[in-house]
Structures are given as structure tokens and as C-alpha cells.
Amino acid sequence: MNDPAGASPETVTGIAVTVRALCDVVEAIAPLGASLGVPAPEEMPWHGALFGTLQAQAARGPLVVAAVCGGTNTGKSLVANALVGAAMSRSVAEAARTRHPVASLPAGVAATADLGALFPGFVPVAWRSDEDALDPAAEDRIIWREDGSRRQPARLVIVDTPDIDGTLRENWHRAELVRDAADVIVAVLTQQKYNDAAVRDFFARAAAAGRTVLVVFNMIDWPAQRPRIGGWLATFTAETGVVPLAVYAVPHDQAAAAAGRVPFHALPELTGTAGGVDTTHERDPGPAERLAGCDFDRIKRRAVAGAWEVVLDRRDGMGTWLDAIDRAAGVWRETATFLEQESRVRVDLPPAPSDIVWNEIWSWLEPRRSRFDLAVSRLYRVAGTGVAWAARRVGLGRSSTERREDFTALEIAALKQALTDFVSRLEDACRHDPRLEQLLGPRLASADRAVWYADLEQRHRALPLVSEDYRAFVKDQLDRYSAENPELVGWVVTALNAGAVARPALTVGLGLAGAAVVPAAAATAGGLTTLVYHVGDVVVGTAATLAGEGALGLTAARLAPLVEQLFVGWSAERSRVLAETLHDVVLGDRLDEIDRLATAASRPELARARQLLDAVAAEGI
Image (cartoon, rainbow, N blue to C red; front, side, top):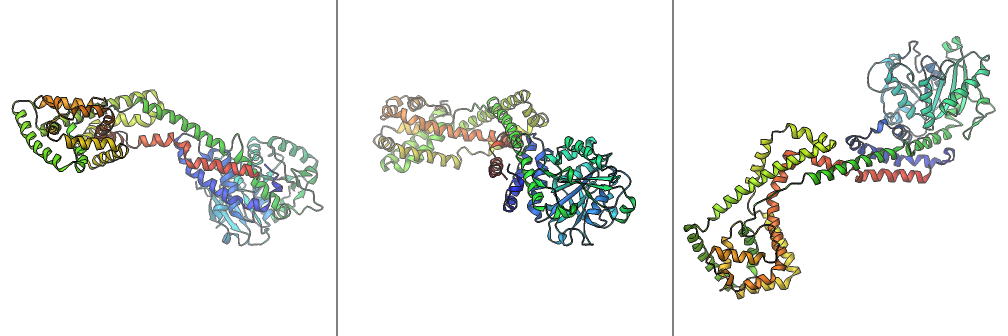
């Protein structure tokens, strides 16, 4: 990271787009991170730097926000009032009475500034009385008022904060929000309150975030205690890492305090040149003038650079949060893979009725056949109807309606058995994977399973034997096959025309074939030949001598994959009702949630966040 003092004003101003983009990305990813069990961004050190310091810097313009912070009964309000030059905040003798920070704005700022952006995390509330800061409301408010005396420097906002070490935890939280939003921290210390644990921790975090710190030792016996201040400061800086911009001493003078005339005695010998910031002046202008004047630009640039260092930190920065999301998503990817392997839907459907599929094939072929072939086919189709009637009379065949009813009964039984098997395997998977148990277990345990089977039956009844989707699928497959194999399709059409007289039993037979003729997985070279022999067995036993059968057998090796695809496509559509019941009724949105978590690492927002962070690091802001 480059020296903050060397950053140009253009660089400081140019952070706005990047900061807003990063904030947007974090807000988009945060719900996903919560689902993955990753700590909330608000719990991470970089969040305050991004959403507090950097977001506020992008919005506030030419203002320095100075937060007056300290422990209980250190005189913070006295110091804040002195910096403003008027009574902006009332001192309260009882510890931890003040609940909300009070901000004093230069005249006219309230009308031009976005106060919500100026103080991120707070609800700005206009001052009405001194009691406002004591309101026990749980809402994080910041009470603002404008400097009516016009003594306050035009570029300086002063914030008086609640105690950083009191008994009320919400006070600590609000003081931290102010610290994150401030450009500079005015650390109010006393000889009793400069090394307490809570005080040290608060200012150590401010130093780690790159905040400019101005130290004020209050209630000093001046000048008698001046020599001792150096020792107190050495202990404070050693414990916190603070390198103060300047150090001041405020005498313990009740009369001066009551009159609002609080002197700030500069102690330049305790700072000299700190962190590249020149703190030696022939005449110290005082803390307020210093913050709004000679050190204004350095303070602003240092606040920005320090915040970026926190956001980019390799151990605790935003990148570690993104890494945590990646790791958590990886665990869910393993869970998704396990679920896919262990809980596959197994459906042993009965073989597809061959006439349904073959009728679609013949419908596609029909425009390509000769008039003579079509006429002969119609003649023998009528004859076949008579043969079928005769076969049923002697017990050799069943009607089309009966065969469909038989198939439907077998099919729904197979689908219901597959549903039972799937749920059983899913329960086993939950027992072996705690994440699946957490997400799916309660639903499997509490659901009315009769509703599942009823839903499956309803979907099955509503499914037509041949849907328009399947007809479109067949046409697409055959069109593609025809384009890739024109000579083979041409041969089939020629064979149909040449063998019209000798082939009638084949045509009739295809209309008679039962559910067991061609299984959905038929992929052998003799698949079509087997069909011809079977049809012959049903009719009169002469199919084996039909003209063209030998030619069909010769080409079956090339036609079989196509036919298999058409049969499998039909069966796949039939099993779709099971998938719909599983997704919509049994599991609801749980599968979508598993997929969302498993694919979290590939979300474009994560890639965008890393891209932005890399760009900032490369710029060396």
C-alpha cells in the first residue's frame, strides 16, 4: 500500500465507484453466505472499514468527521463542546447515561449532505433537546444539530460519543459505528483512564484501521503534571499501536469548564514527526483548526488508505470472507454429489407399447411413400383388423384398450415402487450426511406420504399416451437422422414401395404388437428382426418369410440406435411425472436450495468482488 500522504485527490475521489460496487456485491452475497453458515459480514473487521469509512468517504465530500471518544467520566462532552466552540452536547455526571452520539454540523451542511451516508449504520435524528441523547430507544440513532454560533470550522464535523467502556453494550456498539465512520479519533484520556482494557482495545482497533488519532489528556494538574504525560502516552501507544497526530493537555479547571473556555496546551515534544505527518508548528493552531485546516488533506487520504488496508488484509480482509464462502460451497458440492450417487431415481417401467412408437415413425414416413404402397397398406390394415378380431376370439390377443389398461396398471405400479425406493434411499443418505439431514430430514419425517402417492397418480392420469412434445421429439430425431443418413432412409422408403404386396403382415403386425414386443432398451442388431418374428407368431406364422425382412435385418445395426432413442424418449417422458412429484411435492424447493449452495462459488458476484479487490490492490491506493 502506497503512502497515504502521497495519494492524489483524484485517487481519493475516485474510490466512490469501486466502494459502491463492493458494497453492492457484499449485500448481494451476504444472504448466500448466511445460508452457507459463513459469519455475517457485520462480524468481520473489514465491514466497518468498507461500509463505514470508505462508503462515508465516497459520499461526504470536503468534510472531516472527528469522533470524540473515551471512557466513562473522562470529560468527552467538555472536549467536544470546546472543539465546536459552543455547547453542542450536555455533560452527564452519571456513568453510561448517554445512549446516542451527538453530531455538531457546520452551518448549512444538513441541507446539502446525505446524513445517512455521512453516518452509515445510524438513523439521523434532528436535535430537539439535551434529553435526546439519553433516550433508551434500541434504534441506533445519531442526534444531529447545526452550529448556530458559526464558530465551528466549516469543514469539521464533531461527534460526541457514548462511553466506550460503560456497562451498556449498545454504547460500545454505537461508539464503534462512529469510529468506523470517522476520519479522525480524538482520544480523551485521563491519568485514571488511559490503560484500561476496554479503552486499549477500542483505540487499538482504531489504529489497526489506519485512523488518525489526536490525543487529549484531560483534567490535568497543569503544568505540574506535564512531565508525567510522556510516560502515560508511552504506555498508551505501546499497548494500542496508536501514533498520534498531536497531543494536547487540558487543565482541570472547573471555572473555565463552566464558562466554556477550555484551553488546549499542545505538547509537540511528544510527537515530533509521526508517520510522515509534520506535527511541528511555530504556533499550534489548536485541535479544531488543525483538523479542518493544515492537516485536512492528509487526514482524508490516511483514512481512505487505512480503510483499504483493512479491506485488503490477507488474514482478516474481505478476501478471507470470500474464501470462506468458497470452502462452504465446496462442502455442499460434496453433499450434492453424494446425494446424486446415493439417491438416484430407479424406475423399472414396463416395456413401451411398440405400436405407439412405431405409429409415429410410420406417420413421419407416410409422406415419403408411394400411392400404391399406401393403398395396399390401407387394404391390409383393414384385413389386419379382422385378423385381430379373430385372434381375440380364440384367445390369442387382447384389444387395444385392454392392452393399454394392462400397461397403465403396470406403469403406475412401477412409478409408485420407484417413489418408495427413492424415499428410502434418501433417508439413508440423510443418516450419512448431516447437511442433508438438516435440510431434508424434517420434511421427510413430518410429511403425509399418502399425499405424495396421490399426487403421482393424478399426474399419471393426466399424461396422454402420446403428447405433442413427444411427437415433436420424434419428428426432430427422424429429421436429423434423415439429414445425416439420406441413403438409408431412401432405402427404407424404396423397400416399403417394393415390398408392398409381400409386406402386409408386417404392417398389420405392427398394429397388433403388444407391450412386450420391443423393450425400451432394445439396442441389439436383431431388434427389428425380432419384432418381425414376434408379429409372425401372433398372426399366422409366416412372417419369417416376408419379403424385405432380410433387408431389414441387414440394416438393423444402423437403425437400432435411432429406434432405441425413440423408445427411450417415450419412456423418459412417462417417468417425468415421477420427477415432478419428487421435486414439487416430496422435496419442494430443497433440491433447488442444495444446488444454490453447491454452486455458490461460481456466482458472478464473487468473481466481481475478487476483481474489484485485485484492481484496488494493483492501484496501490
